[in-house]
Length: 383
Image 1 (tube, rainbow, N blue to C red):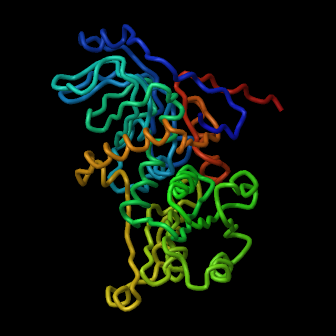
Image 2: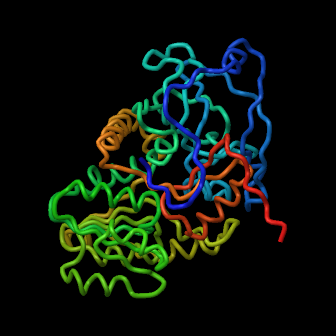
Image 3: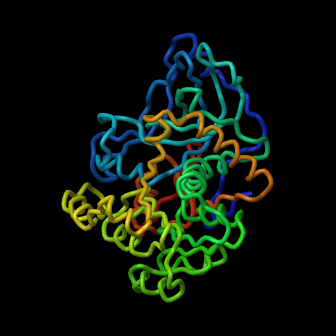
């Protein structure tokens, strides 16, 4: 079962759900409505609005998923700001991952049936009560997995798995540093590292998170309170084998300098560009300005490797669906035998997506933040 850090109520995800009348209506060509979180224009959380939209009809090769839980990712914050190159034009429905059950099938779909419980990835649109998704981006969940666990495992664990085992080639006895250790990917990395013998895991996170996640890491550092590079070098004078960086900017240079010979640095995010609610061209420019230019000759001479990993680009733009399908099935198997267990920080209603985003922006979450379509908003304080 998932570990719940916050004392919040979760929607049950067990069992097989029956499709409701909306699926039949959608196929017949009428336009039943659903609720969705719409980004009206790029900017702050005040640009978000819960609206009624027509339930989509699945096209050829698509399935209609009745959404039960959505994962919130840092990419969603960047899309809201307009900081992502291939963002849809506004207005559009936010969200890139969800779990739920299949309510209707488009023509040509043979590997799923109505009622199957699934995890789905999409370029946008998952923060809705229903979404049409190409079947190649849909993965059937194990029977005992809840919808919340499915949404929490999704992107975080798939990305962590591929970075560790396919990009960085994690093997016995390696040392690993991951930034944002208290986030969904950071915790996924820690759990996946435990599957390999004699791995030493270093993480950076704010001091307030250390007590909660200390059992998952060998050493934790607060980037704002200490020089983590010097602290790590005292513990590992030869350096680190693998650095997983979701920050970029000056931390890219630090990560590269920490690598030992034959070490691998993997950039999988640029969180340092997000410094406020709205897009900052200054922060964007400063982040990239602070990244030193590393010439191929330097890599050759120092026996180091630098890599990038953008999960959604690989899946949607580079033909990675077959590989991701294999990875997702492996993650589901590991969850079934209780090796991988996502940590769920908190859940929010559609009306509270802005609040959820601010929590993630302030790096106050430990584990995954979920958006639950059926959840009622929390009562507002009168004080």
